[in-house]
Length: 215
Image 1 (tube, rainbow, N blue to C red):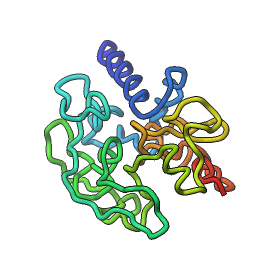
Image 2 (cartoon, one colour; image 1 turned 90 degrees about the horizontal axis):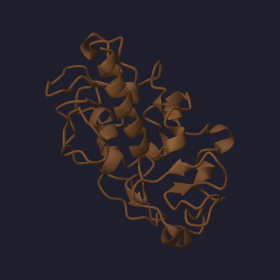
Image 3 (cartoon, rainbow, N blue to C red; image 1 turned 30 degrees about the vertical axis):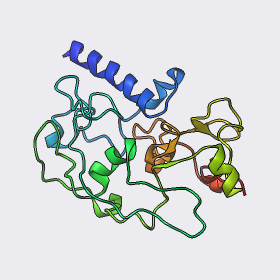
């Protein structure tokens, strides 16, 4: 048991990196215990915190956006956000966003993992569905070109740090994923901040919004 826990802890450290944490943040990004993503008290989770999403063995090798993936992946087609003022080209959810939606779109049961089809669907309050047209856009390239064209976005290549895959004029910065804004740019799936809604940064005074939006 101790050896298995050590393996899972190592896997979680790798997952923290995949979701945008720097090596120095690995411990902070692993605070899933007690968060909205802690399902260990559910009978179907077998007392495990990590297992509904990750496994040290027999992982889904087709999922490259997060290591050791264990959960069924959504195959839904989504209606994405559009607006005449939007300069970005929004694609179908990809990368970590699709993994988030594998519970939150309401088409896949939360307990569908490890090759087992579950029956426990996400609650209505946490479900975003497949119509994302009224949600913040995700899965679009966020770079210097977009910031310049838009005129009211922080340039990730000329902000408060030297990493073009993070955004913000001051820490804590929010991550991009291969240069794209995804669900996990605003939400930390491991809730390292302990903020409600799994937010990476408090939105008091629109603090999270202002990481990207230069008003």
